[in-house]
Amino acid sequence: MRRIKLITVLTIFALFAGAVLMHSCSKQEITDQPVTGNKEVAMSAGDLDIFNKIVSFKEKITYIRENPSYKSGEFTTVDSAIWYLDATLNLSHAFISWETLSGFHYDSVFVTIPKVNGVVNYTDLADAYVELKQKVANVCIEAPGSEKELYIATLTEKEDTGNSITIKAETTIGSRSTPPDHHPFYEGWLYGDLAGNCVGSPPYIGVADACTQLRDKTNLYRHLYIDDEQMFYIGTPNEEPYVTLRSQHFAFINPDDPDPDDNYYERLLVYQKQEFVYHYCIEEDEMNWYYEKLRHVIYLMVPNNPIYWPNANGKTFIEIKTDPDPIDGTYGTEDELLQIIRHQYKVEYRYGFYVGGNSEPESIVEN
Image 1 (cartoon, rainbow, N blue to C red):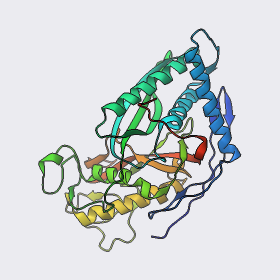
Image 2 (cartoon, rainbow, N blue to C red):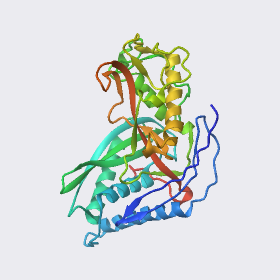
Image 3 (spheres, rainbow, N blue to C red):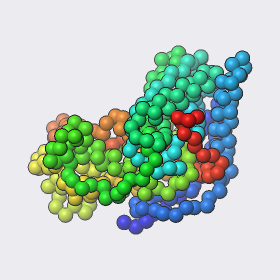
Image 4 (spheres, rainbow, N blue to C red):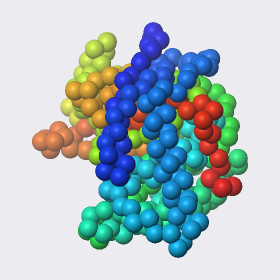
C-alpha cells in the first residue's frame, strides 16, 4: 500500500466557564505503512490557546486544593467538567506519544461529583480530580508488568441523577518496552466466543480468540503507523469519542475477493454467513490478512469518511477499546432470519496537537 500523509483541520469546542473555543491544528502523519523520523514542529497559536486553558484549569484546581478556606464561587457545565478533567489528566500523565508502551492492561474507575442547579462547583471539581488521579494511579500500581505508565484515560459520563454526575474513566496502562516482533500472527485462532487458538491450547480457552487477538495486535503496533512524538490528544465535548465498526457494514465488502460466497476474505473484517460453510478456525495467513485490513480500515478509511463515521473525521486512532468486549461469534442479523459470524470493534479517535517542550507527562504513580 502507498504511504498517505493526512493533514487535518481540527475544530475543537472546549467549554470553559460557558465559553466556546474554536481551534484549528494540523501536524501529524498517519500512514498505512511503518513510519520513521522526527519532525520539528512549532506549536500554533490555536494549539497554545488550548494548552494554556488546560494549564490554567490545573493551576486553579491545585490552588483550591491547597487553600481549603478559599471559595472561588465558580461553576462550570458538566460537559466542560468532563472535558477538562480528561484533558488535564492526559496532559499531565499520559505517555501515549512519549514512550513506546506494550503489555497493555485495561480497567475502569469512577468518580461522582455533586451538581447544583445543573452545574458543577470548582471546589467539588478539584476534589474529583484528586480522587480520579489516585484511582488511576492505583490501577497503574496493580497492573502487571514493570516500568508502568498511563497510556491514555478516556472520560465519559456514566450516570446523571440530577443531583450528581458519575464519570467513568476507561484507563489503559502499559509497560515501557518495544514489542519484539512485528509479524503479528504465527498461528490460527478460533473465530470468537473466547474459544482460544485453533489447536485448543489450555491457556487461551476462555481468554482470547481471533477477535480479541486482532484487537490487541492493532493496539500493540500503533506506534509503527502513527508518527506522533510529543503530541497531545483531546476529545470533543458533546461528542461520542468512539465509533463502532461492524463487519456487516457494506463499506467493508472486499472488492478483490477472488472467490465470493465462500466465507473467505469476503469482507475486510471477519464476516461469515450461515448458508455457506462456517470456517471456525481462522488460520495464520488469514489472521495476518485480517490484521492488515483492520489496520487499513482504522487508519485510512474511518477518519476520512465523514458520511459513515462523522465523529472520527480528521481525527487520529487512539486504541480499540476492551470495554465492552469485542462482539464476535454467531448472532442473528437485524431481521433475525440469518445467522452470521461477525467481528465488531469499539474504536476511539481523538484530535491531536503538538506540545513539544511545553509539556512532558509525569508518572501518575510518582506524582
